[in-house]
Image (cartoon, rainbow, N blue to C red; front, side, top):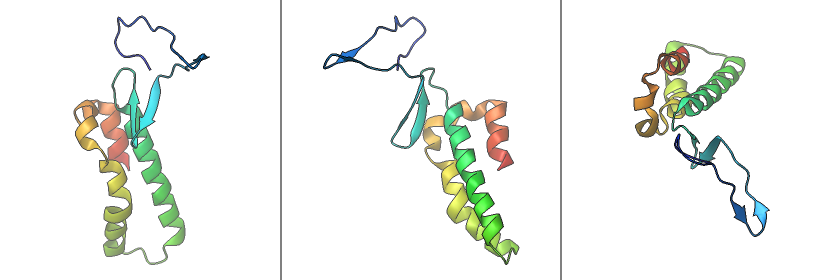
Amino acid sequence: MHFGRTNESLSYYMNGAKLDKVTEEKDLGVWISNDLKASQQCIQACSKANRILGVLDRTIQCKDDSNLICFYKSLIRPHLEFCTAAWSPHCAKLKDKKLIEKV
């Protein structure tokens, strides 16, 4: 991955094998892109939270408010709040905010 607009994007080799160039990479559970924006992190967190919501919707019989709030706080919100210190300033973009708030 190459950072910066003026980076020459040289090819790098390790033990004679050329390393692949990537624009996004997941490290310690956080998605980072070459432009250091957190859109992919927001997309992945919302995707995982929506999958869990779908599982809960299909499996939970008693859907009163107290149960749903408990499930939300314990199973969904941690995915949405993971590593917010790193990407929260960039989340000020309207599309990222809408995506998270839609969950």
